[in-house]
Length: 458
Figure 1 (spheres, rainbow, N blue to C red):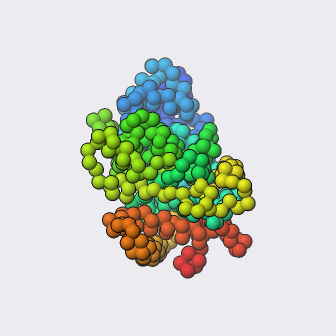
Figure 2: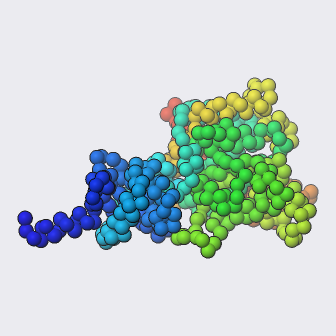
């Protein structure tokens, strides 16, 4: 072997190898970059094991947490010496060469695919890797799939005759639509007394995206308002382009400042951008998804509580337009109008939760796959259809608002409430209805959310 060959071998060993077990296990395969500019490294473990991808900045900002995550993925770097050795090798490895792209958030990845923790829909582009390690693990665990589309269709059929349940089912599909249609997302709140079934409707409807493995029948795919604002920002990022169900705003902070904190959180979420802090490293978090909240008190009642606390005067419209209350129907059984043969709303809710626990996570994936396929085949046609539907629903909304204007002055809500919120939700209902979400189809080949352009544009 020549001197040059020996020198080349020594250089390779210094870069990719080390003494002992680490030498045999770990190789630095490549570096990657996310759209945010965050830098990543791909580590090979040999023996046919899947490579590990992680964000390099995490080694500098929180070394202990970074190695805890790596060890959970099978590296077993316990001693400080082993950890320091890996950091040194990453630092000294030649960063030149082609980088792979990293999809680090759940949601739409440009207009090519939809990223979920366990897959990309319809498929992952070449030279792109998924790494959602910075997203909360408990939320990732909720992206579960179980049952069948027929089973979820049976659940969705209970929306017939129940306007609030039908509305909640439709709200699931706004996230992916707005991501490509370039519309700001929306937030609604079911408001009713305890036991009316508002949380149950949110639980079963959000099962389109998944199910909490621990508290599924309590939260479905969602979580609680009982959190700090900083944690709420991380939660919003984890639900990007899906749907965020936040249960019982009365539980938020659980203090006399609850109303103030609730309203401040609403504004923070609506901004769709993480608060700028001196401790921020890298890009600020962003998010966009529809929100479905439940509460025993309405937004105006929260505002009244805030005024009683002596807060500065505020424009109520700012909050009412950002979190739009939906009360229980005037005539019905709590949040339900039609019990479908059950004795009361509680028994219907329990049946719906049982169906959702057995059939979840499938409908949204099916919707995304077909929506993306149609969008990529005919972007202009899809956007034209959505625009046309929005205009049609706006005309209907203007008629209803004009009819009620003698009793309630609502002109100021038309721009935000109608154009930004009700139109999107109505359009989503149109999409899900015409693709067999809320009722069974006579077409034996149709699936729960199967796109059919002929029927879609009819």
